[in-house]
Length: 91
Image (cartoon, rainbow, N blue to C red):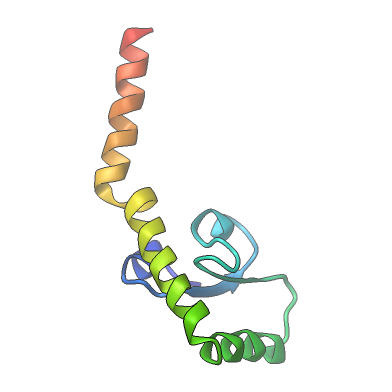
């Protein structure tokens, strides 16, 4: 499982479609999500498919970086917290 910081560096993730992972990794956009249980062959197939499709891999790298910066940077988190504080103070 990858961390959101890996997305920051433009690393598409291959992970499980479980827990909160889909909130970080968008299937076939910023990475690949596997349903449990999965086999080593399925994992290898997903890895191979990315390695054999450099254009798709590059798009995923760009999307991963963008998702990280727009959704998970400290700047973005601070903006969301600030907005929520302002909303509650105005209520």
